[in-house]
Length: 292
Image 1: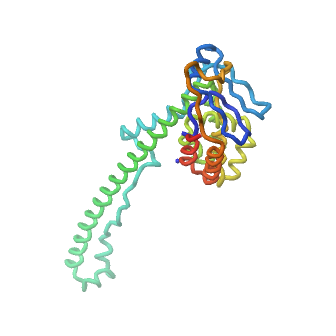
Image 2 (image 1 turned 90 degrees about the vertical axis):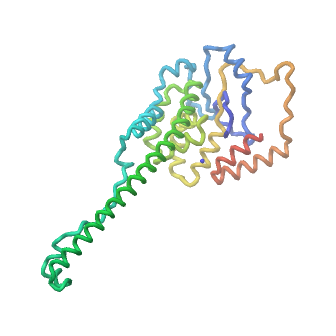
Image 3 (image 1 turned 90 degrees about the horizontal axis):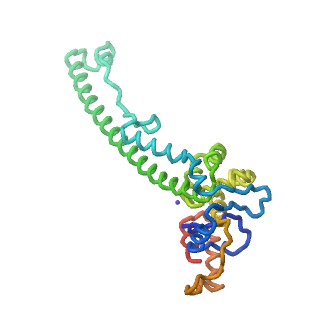
């Protein structure tokens, strides 16, 4: 499995319309006007949500990018041939012929008590066993290479998403993201962390921060796994970042006003977005979101 473009305000928007985003030009102007103010992390409706005062430079110094580094270490080890037990493929070897099964009193009866015939059959079966062993080992080696390569490719892709994930955490001053993730990952079912980061790399840090500050919402996702992706998609859409500097909503000089979508078109798109969210179809949700 882009929900929204890079934004500058993080808030939970309870309105039915899509949240208003800050234009890139406005963000750049705000950053230059308020260099040391950084970005404010706001969760509307959460009265106990703390304010994040650190700016992006300060946050960047503290974020360890723990999981990104761990992923890179894994990729490096695999590239050097250091394969973990969970990725090892063991050959399924056939049973080795046992001479006693050919020369015992009971076994010789099958060969009319002819020892030479029994030994000849044993030699033939042993040669076939050696061929089968070589084939099994060759197949295991091929499967091992494919499994490792697939894992490296998947890990490299996830690492790319993790890079975006931490870049946004740094940019918006979520400087305790490593501690947040330590707490969150201990509660999330296996695979959920990677799915959220891969699906919403520009919002995942904000999602984890919000869930960490609102444990009841996190528990709600865990208790209803069938609807978890739908609910996370809606949460990602509702979270936006905003610079602490006051941003003008007026268009810049000599810049034409955007016509946007008509009310009826917007309503139709929003309805389709709701259906996509209900199905957990992130790709379709993002495509429709881009039309607003």
